[in-house]
Image (cartoon, rainbow over all chains, first blue to last red; front, side, top):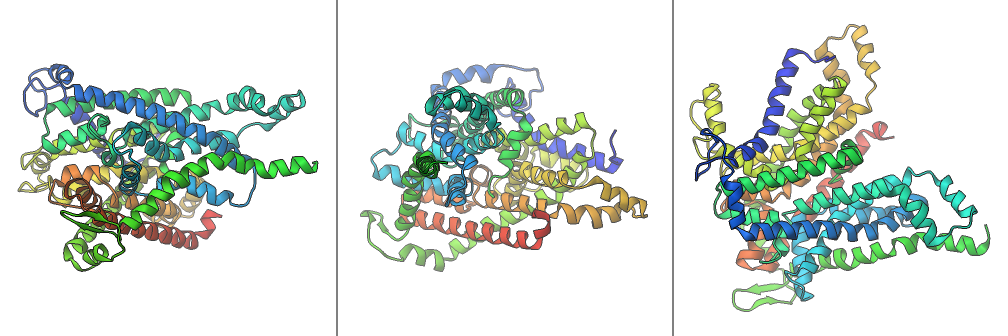
Length: 268
Length: 291
């Protein structure tokens, strides 16, 4: 049952069309058979998807993005999981300040982070390297990894752990056999959200990437700066399709509403 | 608890957070401090960066009207984007919230999903829709009789605001949505049973209660818009600069890093002051809501 009046529904329809239109138009133009930007009015063609194969820099950039996202999200979790457990379980002096510091990359404009990392890694002799990209991405995805892990650690049933301790488990065994499996859904979702953030970042990465370490958004951005042709639309359509697949998987695993609620606080 | 165990539990949180803390100090705080320092260094076309302490860059930003104009443009675009998302996003969140279960989650997904789709792809979509004077948006608006002449969207502030509002809209809808979840539907029913019409209910009951959500959404949208890079760079082109695209130019084209660092530092300080200040104001004004 909808309690919205006709005016509200008209507003809603226009709103949804406007939200979807830019994404839809990219996907439609990608199927154009023409050599220029146009909606596919004379049938659909996969011509521009095949053209991607002639641009190895896009394919290479895709692999860089994939590796960077997977690796930096994993490294971020190595740091975030212990930190989340400490923040969830202990009340200690400096706890709030520490949590604020760990979430601060959400508040710092990415352009500022890009500049800071460019300056830092250039003086460290790591300018333009993949290692520098990994470290920088670990910092920007850390808040997302921490948040979802923190939510899982806070909501966890501690009695299971106590039972394990009473049966003689301790330290590493306790973590690996009891704690980690219990918080795993949160950890995996944290990884997935961190991956999406890393995969999507342009503003910070554009400062750090060099030819050879360019990520897909950076390659696309630099390409669009020079000319907009159907090739970038077909690449974009592929990116959109990949993101959609990730979204559906994330929704199955964890519930998209919870993930998005975590992202919605960005900037606070 | 024994003395040893107590001592261990006092040290445990620090042992667990130490790696992350070292990481953040080493590769976040130090680079940020280096950037602030960089803004006080000298730079010349042929001599490059000279590590001395001078106020040259800050003086240039303070006196050259080009920078005042650029920062004013940056914040003007951010303010207009924030207003647009609030005016359209808040009603949409309200309408969504009144839908029945299945439609509600479907449309929520449609509206929030773009949040995770590449900003480059979304902005490219707007560039395609705007596309010169005979772009789809102009054709549509003229055929609907909204306007008689095409207006330029590409390379204009209007286009930037429209595309940015689209990119930021999910944050606003999400924030108002969260506020609506805390709202007691019985208050609306009570107002209705006391004879209030729909307009009165919205004005006197709904708006005051979702205002904290609108305002916190506005802070997020404002700070992200003021520091946005991809959308202003693609829609604004090379001439219409905002703070982020100017800093990018100074770093990667002009190579005047100290000046770029000063622009970035100023943007960071201004945004932190605005965000922290308005958060404090909102929390004081709506203390009862946050309690």
